[in-house]
Image 1: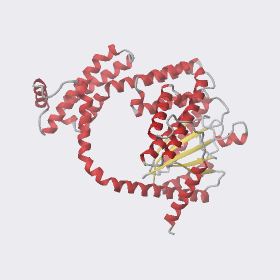
Image 2: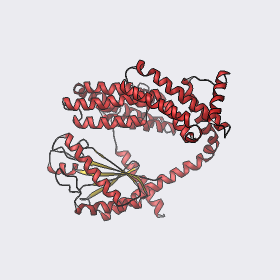
Image 3: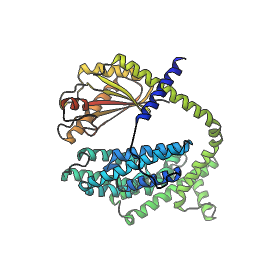
Image 4: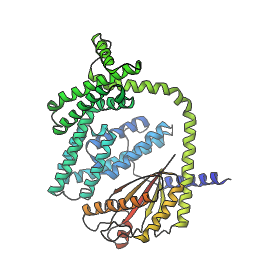
Length: 455
């Protein structure tokens, strides 16, 4: 048995044992035998949980429910036995039930600030991945500041969080009202609108920014921003149509292309309805996708095989990295383990001075040793996560953990590993041991390096 096969076999056995040991409460599903209906039931549970903001009030249980629901969907898609699908769905439902119970208790102390968050959600935050990410960052700060909603916000902190959710609400309105115009401008720039249609591009860009500013001033007053939004969409639609004319007949001057568009509109050959801009953009995108469709289908099997080999290769690399870490790093200094498709390097002894974010010279050797292992893994991204114990205020701990994570990230960047580095601070919000003992607090004071590798 060669080394690669042996490594894969050992990893597979380990995963099977780990998964077999896990046990979770299961909730009874309305449909006891139909996996499609079972998943639909749990999906409705998740939608209700989102509307009730359980994803922030009881994020641990909600996240677990989401994970098991995703596993149930995947199991159904891959044709696994109905029993397997239903088990995962019933575990997901149980987690959503637990989230509801926890949220009911916590909501009492958070209902006022949650109104501001609910307004942002109603404005369409979930329609944009970037906005969802921003909301999650605010949510993390809120959970940290309130110690998972066990205490009330001060009036000053309440005001700050309210402002952040109001800004998020404004951005959500801007996105829902003007994303079509923004996408038309982006697409035009990709097709060299700066050179081909500079006047139309400038007009569309100015109208878009004007509408953005007006919405920012009155995000809850459609009557105030309606006209500016329509003007932005109209100029973006004209830009889109003019670009299409020029793409169809290369070399056409912008002024001639504008006249052609106006003539086609007058003859009814081209609609000036700004409401169709989003549909037109989708059609253009779909046309490009259709041209690539045959190639994608042809490469489908090869891609699947390549992905399987890539995952296997990643597992082997992770195992090799963990083996090397055991040789190079003492368990007292660092712990290395796999979590899904990530590899975690838990640095236990950076030895920051109390309240300080300067890395001691004695600890830089540990970071350098970890960096040397990471370089061999062909890493794509490393997220540096800072954590503290519960001594001191949550707000100060949050800032301190972020500063420490930033210091470690900057030092790693100076080692020129060739991978992307980001950082975040979680303060005392993610303990892995009890803060009631000195040993537990020492364990909680840590820096985690969460590593993703190139596939």
